[in-house]
Image 1: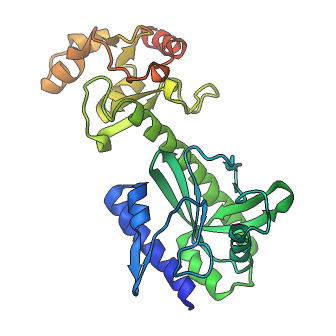
Image 2: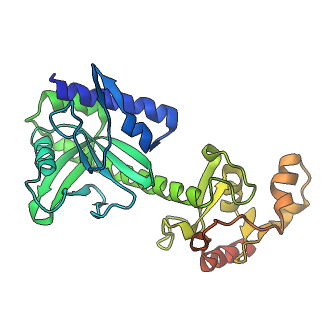
Image 3: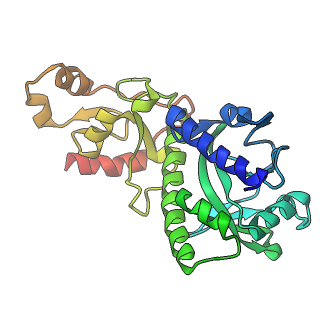
Length: 297
C-alpha cells in the first residue's frame, strides 16, 4: 500500500473519531486542524473546493460550502460536483480526474451552515463531463475500500447498485442535517417554547411535514423545538396559531400528573413562542394556519 492510500485510510479513521466526539456535523476548525501522519500534519479543508494536502499525491477532499457559487447538486443516485473554474485542465480538475482513473476513495464535505460540515466517506469519482464542467460522485461502503484498492482495474456490476443505494440514503441525511442546522442557528440554539439551550436535545420541527410536496426544507417552514415539544407538536398535543400563540389540547389541560405535565405542557398554554431575531426567519403564517386548522380539528 503506497503512502497516499495509507493517509486516506488514516483520514477515514480520524473522521470516525471526530464524529464520535462532535456528532456528524463537524466544525470547520476541526477539519482545518486535521491530524498528524508520521511527521506531517494532514488537514482536510482549505479555501479551495478540491483539496490536496501537501503530504499527498492526489486530492483527498471535495467541499461544497453552504453558499457555494458552483451549484453542486444531487439526483437520486449521484452527486454532481462542479469543476474548479472553467478550465478542464486546471491542476485541481486534473488531480480529481486522476483520482477517478485510479479509483481512489476521497471525502466529500457538505456545508450545512457557516463553518459546519457533514463529512461523507468514502466517495468515488465515477464520471467526468468536460462539456458541463462536472464530475459525477458516488458514495460507497467503507468495507469496500480495501477491495477496490487491491483490484483498481476491476469494477463489479454490484458496485453500481450498491453505490446508487448508499448515495440516495446519504442525500436524505444531508437534507435533514442542513435543515436542522439552519433552523437551530436561526433560533439561537434554543427551544422556541421552553428556551432549552442544549443543542443536542433540539430538533428542527417541520410545520408542513417534509414528505408533503409543500414541506420545503426552509427556515420559514421550521421551528426549533426540544425533543419533548417536537413530539407534542407532531402529535397535536400542542398547536401554534398563525399569531405565534401556543395552545395545549383541551384534554391535556384537564389531566393531573407530575411537574412535566404541569410546567412543560400545561404551563405553556396561551403563551407566545420565542421567534428568531431576524423577521425573515419567522414561521410562515400561512403554513402555521394550515397546521393550526389541523390542530383545531
